[in-house]
Length: 208
Image (cartoon, rainbow, N blue to C red; front, side):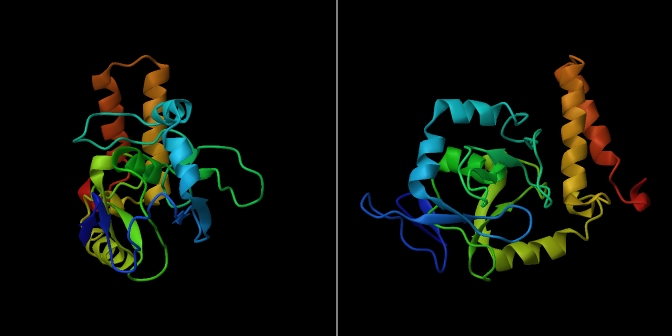
C-alpha cells in the first residue's frame, strides 16, 4: 500500500483525481450489487452539516478506543445503512454503508472501492464488528486480505465474528440495547452494561 496526497492507495486503484476528473465509487449494501456514487455526491453529503448531523444522531459514540455501534437501519451483512439523500431510481444510490460514510467523513473521499476482485480496495473492520462506525477501527485493505482475516479470526470464539446470531443479528441486538437504554434515560454506565449483555448473549455456548 502506498500513500498519495494523504490517501492510501492499493493495487488497481487509480491515483486520486485532480479537480477536472470525477470518479465513481462502488459501495456494497447487503447482497453484492453495485451502487455507483460520483465523487461530487459524496463531497456534497460529507460537506453538508445537516447530513452529518443526521448521521451523528444514528451512531452511539463511545470515544475513539471503543466501537461506535450504529443504532439505525442495518443491512443483511450487519453493516449500518445510512440514507444520505433520496435520489430517483431503483438503485438506492442515496443509501450508503454507514461505516463507509464514517471513514470518509474522517479521512476524505476514497478514490475507488470495488467488491469482487481479489485486489479491489475494501474497508476492513479491525474490531471485527460489522455494526461499528468508528473510523479509527477501519482501515483500507484488499478483498483478498479481508476474506483471509475473516476466516482466521472467526475461529476465535470470543470474536464478534463467532456470534451465533450472525453479523446482522449482533448489530441489531446491540443497537436495540442502546436504543432501549436511551429511551429509559439510562446513565452511560447503564448503557455500557446493556451493550455488554447484548454482546455476551451471542457467545457460543462453549464460552458460557
